[in-house]
Image (tube, rainbow, N blue to C red; front, side):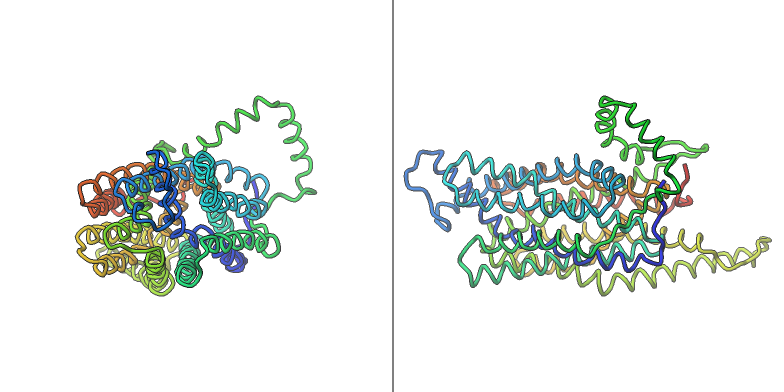
Amino acid sequence: MPAPQPKKDASYSVDRLLPYVFLCTIGPSVVAASNLFVVKYLMCRYYWVSRGTDNIPDPGDERCANRDVQALAGSVLAALATLDGIFSFISSPYIQSLSDRYGRRPLLIIGPLIATISTGSILLAYYVNNTTLAWILLILTGIFVSASTKAVFLPSLCVADVATDEARTRFYSRMEAVALLGPGTAYIISALVSRYVSNIAVPYFIALGAQIGASAWSFFFIAETRQFPKDDDNSSDNDEEEEQEDSRGIVAEITESLEAPVKPLKLIWPHRHKGKLHWELFVVALSLFMTTSGTVFIATASLLFLSDKFNFNPENNAWMLAFLTFSRFAYLIILFPFLLKFGRAGYNRYVLWKEKKKQADGERQPLVRRDTSARQDDANYFDVILAFFSVIVDAAALGFVSLSLSYQQVLAAFAIMAFGAGDNPTFKAVFVSYAPPEHSSEALAALDMVFSAAKLASPPLLGALYAGFVEIGKPQFLFLTAGGLCALGASLIAPLIFAKRKFKPTE
């Protein structure tokens, strides 16, 4: 079992990861508005070519505003997100397993380079005239875009390697804030490029540069956070393990590879241990699934909604995305740390007050200063409360979007949604806190698989619903549906607030 990295190096290690996360998130974000434009044009071209027209529309042709073309573009964007979800779900356990075996750093280097395939494919699809080749390139885009999300998933494993329970949520929130700063910066760049540069390829070259830069940064500046046993101390054990691996043969290797996706999922399934039923991870995972199903398609749906209902162009869409991300970034970097610090302190004082009251009521329990383990349990419990209210805010904000009659009201609703930005870091921290310490990386892999499954389920469902709502002239109903899914996710995590259970069960 690898020894954990000394906790005193945690802040240093996380700070080195932040520029990497920033560069990785710029890549897919700087081309988000352009991707919408490219896919709409490709579907417009395909729609009219399939109907035998000899006059192929140019980008911006009024024929591309056809309602059927808009519905087709929405379905294709949902299909691309579905492909992303499929390959993201499949790859999560393998990436976790490979990083456990070979270290985090090699995959940190390789991930952004694989993501360049997605960025390059959609750009080529725009320029090629062959419809079949364009479809193939779009499929490649959907498959390899998951490399971008996996490049951000790996730093969360690094945090689990080095962070204590009390510091974990703070580190995850810091990483989540930078993961929003990257897209926010990218959307501003995209808006400025759309205004001043007519060449559609420029955002894609910026994305490629950021992805290559992320790989270079990890190569030169990020150290390995996963510590392996020293060779001289464990040479005999390693020799025995190598002999056992050789004796297993190829069939056993293949079997182990096929079982890799199941192993993390076993961790979250309800099970009995030492006479107690452990169900918390399952509930958190199910809550995350519902919440993510409601929110993961919102960025794409917002672009389609604003384009169709309020005639937003690519520049306006880019500014809208920048507003979405920077409002969430501002909450995570300014308000969330204070809420985390003073909220935990307030809850700790409340627990101390309850203990004093019990003692005053005659219970003979010596009142001592709460030890580190007790304070960490308090921190983990407060994270559960924070996750619950963050999801409630998401549900309410999405409900307000469905009631909006102008784009200004849509902006106001998304500003409210920014106060739910703490859900991602708290979900990660809560999930790891309920997992056995030796299975932290598997817990994060399972969490990422749940997130990927939601990404897989949400786009076909919400994408099809959006196409149907567009047909009846009520696209805003999609946000009401998404808000309902978030409310269901909040109701699932609510029982954990009332459950009196120790964190960190042991095997």
